[in-house]
Image (tube, rainbow, N blue to C red; front, side, top):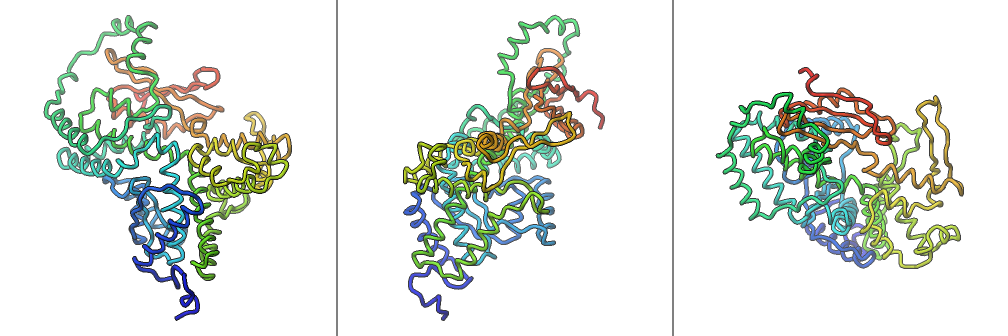
Length: 517
């Protein structure tokens, strides 16, 4: 027996583990996390998976239940190639925003690493998922697993009834439009219960039996009739009736397309529900990873201070922690932007410093929290009520701006060089903080494409509009490919007009009628 193993109170010794060790370690880690940080979490379901299963989870966007699609196999082969050649490691864990919270742990992890990722995912991410307002408003943690089970079985039945090729064609088009298939400004309807989903199955089966294709034979209106209808009053009335403009393109196609059969509409709904599920995660990466990293760092140090983790295990934990929060320099070949783990952890620790040991500068910038002493309450409130953009705008301090050596570059289109617009000084702090926060604002950086008009009684021409910011237009190749997908779901001509977000002037216009192939 080793010296470490003979010490009383250690959660584990050595790198080996079994399920009893994992269970006991989780109980202790959960108790310490609640005592040290006051966390509030969903019940936890921990799953042990192999590296092959982790790669499979990567390919199906990390969900425990998923329908089949060729793109998932493509992603699997891509990640497997990188992993086998040593070009990329695998995540230590994957955590699912569900109730119960599902945490996948790699069976290759040592016990020290299992303890670390348990604190990180099963406590840190879990608390953030349950308490952050975006996840509370925009996702249904208690219904997502049941819905995914319904989605998988429904698409399997569609493949059996309509053929794999027909289902794949709809999924291809829906996946291509996934980024334009979310509600950003209004709350989506909550997911249905199992009883409601059973009723939905019966309704869809009835609609498929009674589906009538006769409307396709109706003659189109003459050009003169269409021209007479296209006046300002009728257009305004039509847009009001259709609730236009509509930001959620998949939702509009699901509800309005005249060529889709009921089973195809349900597939569109499935894809957009999954897209909506991930929408809050795209807005909270810095906060979510920062929260989880702060939790595991705090809990692991508390366990070490209490004699529950040995020195060897703690060194391994700190090594893994350092790898996670490593921030390469801008001139480092490994640089790919700001590491959300590093920035998030630094901001959490900086908030704790401001609350407990403020400087005069901190008191000027953060008068409400500086020196208040209760850093736990401040952090819990921040985790619950902010997303990345607002969190950075609210809490990024001059001290942290100096530590990170942040500055703002100005890039003017008609100039051949960059200019340094703001540096870390008294005049630059506000602009630097605002510029960094703007980078994490999904609303400001996401491609804004909306349905603006369609004449259902005439030529059924679907008109989309792209609001162009800073002169950045869409890539013509991907734009044309996406128009083909929209036309496949709509059935008639689709046009996309790019207009300047500031002036409203037309910059470009593309139409599916001019596409070949």
